[in-house]
Image 1 (cartoon, rainbow, N blue to C red):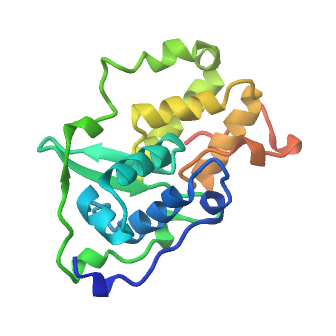
Image 2 (image 1 turned 60 degrees about the vertical axis):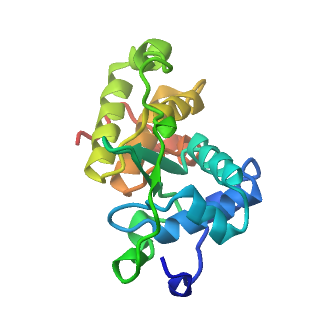
Length: 210
């Protein structure tokens, strides 16, 4: 990719104000977002490191940090090529992303590394068994499946790692609040789920079917 074509980055408010995310990871998010066109960001760690003037190890750590916070998702093709997609936030919809700069320039080299495959069934416990308290509730279970299908329709399917992190975030939250938050995310085209945004009067026992 010709760096002269690179016009800058945008960092959503939620990412910028997240004190648990390092400054380097925040800048990396903005860079990935600027490259996340209709085919995703397929820049290699070498290219990202050269652009940010840091080491490949810093890039690896930053991508994992963002993935752990569900700000990005990583996908590995059968050929071992990595693609990164940024996840939307309440203040930033994926439809607002920059145009894909690779359509008018030389594409950055891709990253090939099976080590990034976070869907390894040998290392991740069965999700529903681990979160049986949530999935024993039929209303939550149906809402969650609707959300997962919605993410697939948006071509941003949940990785097992991202699903684990989101479900862990729900621990101790009232299930009716979670159902309302999930339905809100689908209705407003949000990629994440934000139970903290649900007002008490919004919760209802009759959730919307999708």
